[in-house]
Image (cartoon, rainbow, N blue to C red; front, side):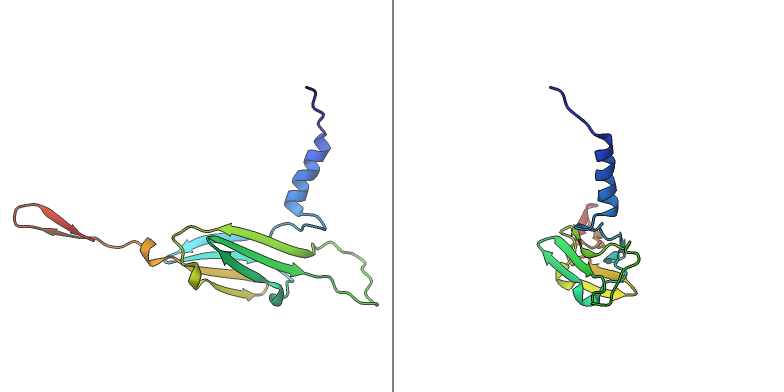
Length: 141
């Protein structure tokens, strides 16, 4: 079978994934890290109205949606329009070790910060080792 390839189409596809399109803007940049008993996810959302941000958790999937709109009106005339507009969506697949019922979210200076506590059952704990009289050790969890 003969397959036809278009190398420029592949470049376009990769570019669209990275920069997005008018109909589907690029994903929001993310930093994620654990600090002690907290998991943090920090997402850049500059120019987004805080009221348009929607965070939902279903099972272990955290979905963040936000929208950036262009100014509209009869007297608005764009000279340049390079910033991506539209609805941005990002999904994070969380582990069972996080307590999503106590998720905290804050938005400041264009940055959405999500804090999720590590579940009590997943935190490291010390195990006590005691010696019995016969030289055997008992472990108490």
